View 1 (cartoon, rainbow, N blue to C red):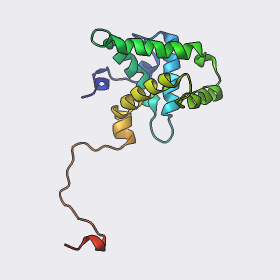
View 2: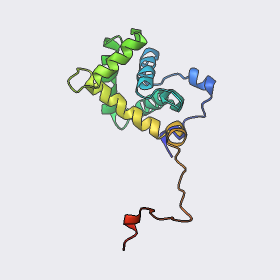
View 3: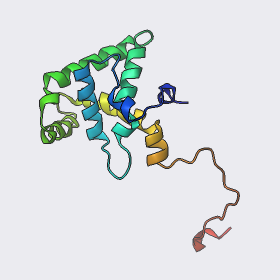
View 4: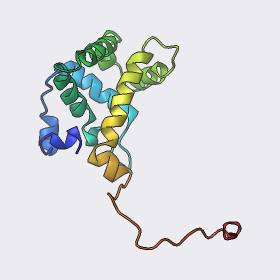
Length: 156
């Protein structure tokens, strides 16, 4: 069971009417855009379909009691993005900034790394990431094992 599975079922309306609990509306919009740049929607689901930003907000909101340093680190990262005016940049400028932040020499690298780590975790533990994207079939087993067909591996 993932934390994402504890959240209520999300339809299209629930996704658009989500009210962040830890982040401000502006911070949430910035985070949502950033995660969609990291894992865009194409022929497979992306961060939007996996509701990555909602998951991150949920985790951050509930981290205060046991891991206040998590909230502190995220507050610092979001402050960095807000100071960089990420929300007011054009789509091309946002992409360029994210690409620059991916360099360890960039001043926003810690922010990039923090957001990327949580985005990847949230995405690949969601239905959209694990089942729809990776096509995970669950705890299945083979009823028959055909073995290797390479002739060089038939030698005992």
